[in-house]
Image 1: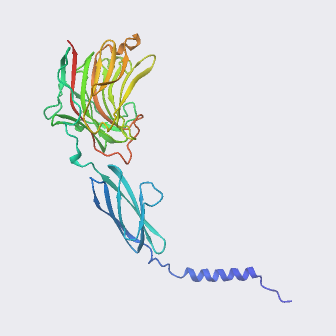
Image 2: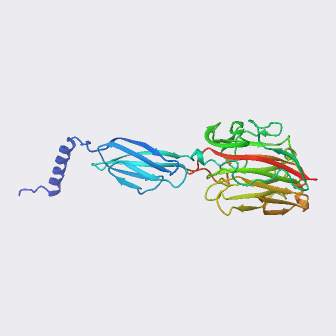
Image 3: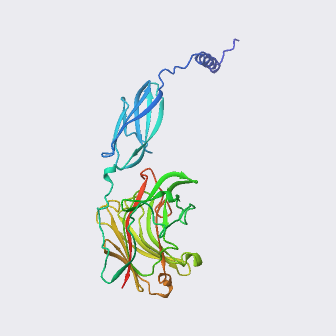
Length: 368
């Protein structure tokens, strides 16, 4: 009897024959996209409108993605993309160029929208306070006239290491300048000595210390996620007793980003079998502390600490308890702008650099 060849065997032979013939045929790549370029045609600092032009050989369609979005903001055949961004800062746009074959090339560009120079806040904008008060004598002030920091009163504190708060900046003298009647501390996004940012921190330690009185500091604050300006004081005995036993008086702190630039904080830190703190905050009724100059005031006597913004009291603390002896001793001033840290968090794509804290004056008055 004649044996029949199994159908499965015949199908296997046919598949091998077809595969062998297909393998010999060259793959047609003429329909794949090639040489994708993305050109930034324009960036409007006034309207925040950006125009891009993508181009690639064999491209039949372009898709434009904003940041980490998974859906395209626009799909077109021209490669021209226009978008108005919500705020100043850094953004990423990813472009995909598709060919008729269905394959695509991808390229990402970074866009930086700067604050226009004409939007700089004038020194005349905002609140100011007088040079004299009834019942007080002006005992020290710095109006920041001239072209350099007065090193008879101030010293630079330099370095990195997180400063106990996991901050990311390296403090340098080069980030401080004086001009136009202003002290400027500038935070920059630049790598220096292993730190991704630079800034400045100045203090009157060993030069000027004060106990009790009224302190007025007129300043324009920076802004942005992860930006942390501070105007504050530390006990002059910190080198012998350490922190927090020396006491810390935060006249003004602001943490930037997430809608927080309309609020400042006043706080005390001291030692009570370990670190303790107490304080309050002030919120503007409109705008932010980057829109105009404000005066941050501390009135300090043997009985209390009182914090004011633009002569409006927003918090006070009784310092008569015996465990608050830190606040009945001399303190020195510190001005700085930190970048990142446990409290503010860290800069992101929305953070625009450089950021500047400008100080018009510091004035210390004591009772007659």
